[in-house]
Image (tube, rainbow, N blue to C red; front, side):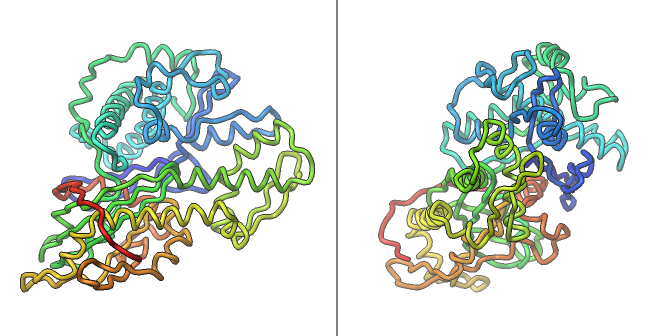
Length: 448
């Protein structure tokens, strides 16, 4: 999913209803980060790409659904030299991964700009700073991702201006190729793009944690997205009288775990395919791949899914109760819990100092670690498991409980949508907290 949030002159951030702008009948704020390079020579975006890929009267066509995966786990190479696989490009025109990312940004920017113009007028876009968020990486990948993202957004801004007023979510592949070839390699738009990404765990936690002024806290953010689960521990201070946290120090070694929504998709697809009583055709496998996200949403929203292929053929019913108890899902949960405790172990000395330090009069030693669930997986049962555990600090021996925060702040206006929007909303705040770190300490003897 892709999300956008906006803040005017330091005011409260708000989410742009991209799904509503796109005409998605289900989603209001996020849109599918999907592209279909179709056999009819067109490139389709977002919900239109999903619908076109599933048209009953034609052959199902594979979509690009997780472009971000190429940045988070892919090789650190020049993406403009990596061609789209033939299985995902049936247009007959060559495109690279860098082209695909730029095209997706152009679509997102067109929806955003049209919405803001319609609501607030053209002059609003005269002085804009564009930001992006990203997971916590090591220095090398962090710099590489920042470069790829700033370049892609700059290309997307140029493309968006050339799409024309009649653009409705698709573009001829030949025209897209010409527009891409005409891009300026040193775009002036780079000047309006922040060169470094806002760290997703910090962005996700700012609004949730900025509710009780005049306090010091320890918080672990667990952002379960599509490709990765990002976990980071940080200490924050929200001084009296300020609306948000103004200082953040990351502690220990943040991690990105490649177990998240995409992994659940693969696990669910495997269960569906293994449970099919009849032999599945190549077309059946493609249909399962194209529908898996929707069926996953059904399981976690309605506690069950009945996978149905074209022609009305039903496969075996899958319930939430059964799915969350399969070995692969249980293994994923345990890996996420182990990763959380690994982050805590890497900062054990700091945690103990917060648990025992003689604090100034305004602050007291902490007695719990706040857990902030964010992302599409914010309501997964792993958080109920974490809530029943504790961290035994060393050498003091103090037990710190885990206070799993509600994914939606007390004053949130987005209801169940907030966990998916938390990163975008936090990243849009004009006054970002000063972030120091990461500052890893040596792993010692933390227990749980």
